[in-house]
Length: 87
Image (cartoon, rainbow, N blue to C red; front, side, top):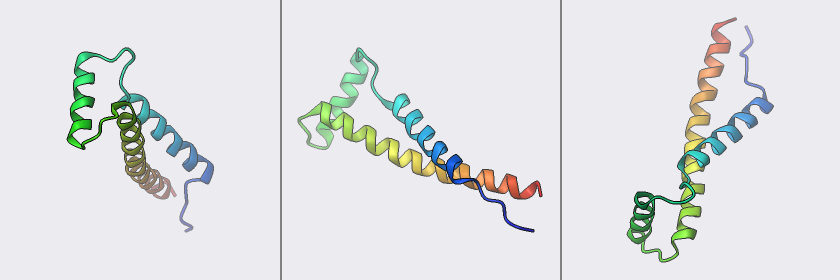
């Protein structure tokens, strides 16, 4: 029996989906609420950053990338195990 793999195009789309989903869920709303403003200001001051807008952008990219990497790996393993059980 051959091991079935997830097609490369589907892998790419899955990674893009997770990145966009994470980015849209984590980004601050527009207009920013008082709680969100306080959170991002406190987080920026914790790292000693004066530019809060730049900090939010970099934080969103890092959070989205890490979350995408982890969720991508988990979902690919689950899909491949499902495909190989069905044989």
